[in-house]
Length: 186
Image (cartoon, rainbow, N blue to C red):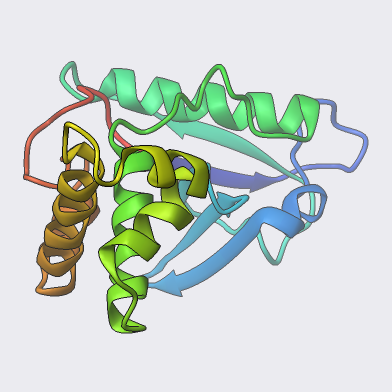
């Protein structure tokens, strides 16, 4: 998250931003005397909190970025770099949005949770997740690694459904409350 002050600017100002150019990614919420602008393609996120002025009502504007302190400034600078890259290229930078640790595992857990709710067997889940060929050759093999993996995903899905999902919303924390990545989310 990056806090900004907004001042109106002429449309010809090369330093001005016009939110209309980013509207396809924008969700805007007003509350507490502020505008909160989230830019997202569903996978990548950038959040700007407008502490003074408006990005919505005034057209082209100049942004004053509010950076301070020593402990969180790196996260704010990363958000600013992400915003600048989106503005310059019209897309979210993979370089500045590395994959979230554990995301693939959590997505598997969501799929397994849906499959459990639909009444699927563990073998059916393994086939959908890892492919029927692998399941056919390994399900009753020397190891029960596929069954164990599906069971772990089912347990994780149950924990998430029981409220564990809240830990994902804590800034910088992983699903178990750890600070896995060491960087703030934007």
